[in-house]
Image 1 (cartoon, rainbow, N blue to C red):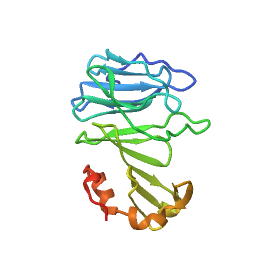
Image 2: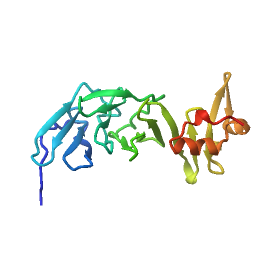
Image 3: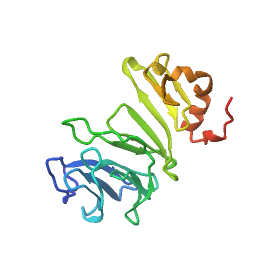
Length: 212
């Protein structure tokens, strides 16, 4: 049984609808489309368009990754530049500080997915590569990055470089120090800090934890 149709987005060779999020009170929906590079807010009861978020540049083949905060005040659409948007004003308000943006795999469409934490303090983003990134929704600062490798190996790294990981996870990463490329295990004594990684993932400011 069809309850409501939200009609208005365009389709192109880049695709059609790439994301949808429903407000926590069930009153409105946010959608995004790679076809017209817009995000839109709809009233669910009537199917009427309430707002259009424009001025966006495509990210990984088109706008997508639509997400809504639990209080319905903030939204995220994967656009260039990446940012958290204020729903009431329809404007980007918090730029996300993301180094080395991924590129779309050849022949594949947009794959970005995103989710606000229920407490509203962090935004979790996966952009089609092997990483999941966690951002502070107030500052846009990247707090941590989770990386998966073959054979279920993994790493979790903070923006300061502290890390935790599986038994062989560190074998997959190298770091640049004074023009040299070193295995991350060479920095084990300083940067292997599961306590700092855990504090960061719990929403605490790891910069307040003294180095060993």
